[in-house]
Figure 1 (cartoon, helix red, strand yellow):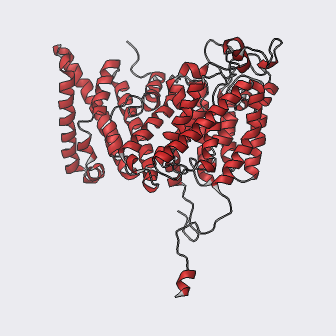
Figure 2 (cartoon, helix red, strand yellow; figure 1 turned 90 degrees about the horizontal axis):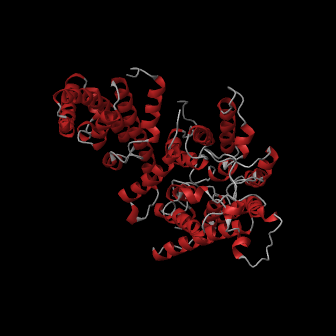
Figure 3 (cartoon, helix red, strand yellow; figure 1 turned 180 degrees about the horizontal axis):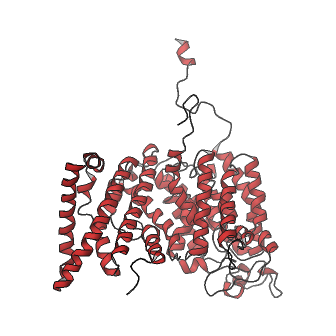
Length: 197
Length: 337
């Protein structure tokens, strides 16, 4: 049994989740919000915050759901129950926020329900289980995966805001150029591959 | 109504210098000439072929796409030549020529023209090309280092019938490794002077710090680049390596080796300073320089690839719009925020 809190492991997990295996640029998870909500920096920051919030919450929740599943020996229901739990959780959080913190609710806005069924959120839950993380590592991994996602999203939004004011060829406008940018960004992030601390 | 015609209403900029894209690009080519010559001297005729293929492929790709898309064919501004030359200088001299051609075509078609052409690209095209090649053909791109001045060995004759020998194609015989090599392989012995002059293995254009600095001085003198960005880039790498890079504790890192080895000088002065893909203000450029230095240091000391200059510049290219956004200069008369 390894230590509950081991800082060098946590550091490796954090760097790995943000840079080396960036959810968008290396694992190619959550591409739809990455392309869809990266048109302006403001909305990308909002989306980033929402993802950080939901992913961390979902990571922790599914960790315990998996424990329950493991007790009954029905882990094959993982994917199904995770989707259900995440969706229910986000709906619940949304209702809670609307009632008790309207400011945050309006700040997160449409992005909160939007990421309910996001593959990145499900991905982080499944990866947590697959890597066999303990609860502290689950929190760090989920948080950092989301931070990595937010980082990629904001970078992308900055680039797309600039592309808005240059005349990109008509056939390349919108999604095509976004995918080319994402591809080159992903190539650039390959520089982090194999990084060890 | 003649008064109307004397009032020309346009958007800014209103003050124009006599400088043109053409002129800038020619200056860059002039500045790259010493390093190109040094590369060809050290790595032989073969590297001249690589550079030629890179330039021709870039120019042909640009002309072909612009013709097909019915844009104005703008190869006359030499920007494609500069991209091709820079890409070629970033390749090992023994790399297969078809890889060179593909890299150049990618740099122009995907990293430049897909964005609308010169001045609209987000990423440095030459670096995007190089990084794509590194991802696609990692073995070919990290082999093919030639021993510097290999053509001086006793049994070599330029006039031999063996074409492979003459072109340095039989690279296995004369291969070498870069000073930054990682893993099992060992670099050939070299002194600091060798590094500075360029008498070490490496990419065609990156080895001779001396020739690169001469060219860079010309660019700074012509005011096409400002010294702050490259200075911050190099200084950040140097200081970080000095702090953390040593084997015997802090402050023992061999920072001179890390500054002159690899593509740092080439990248800092000729690639990071690309006026299209770097921040507009000096403050922004300093941020970019420090960011590039930090990332290069991380990749070199902690990362997998032996060299991190191209990755770090590309990542900072991606951050440039955000840097520009937060380093907008205060307008005259505006309150201090």
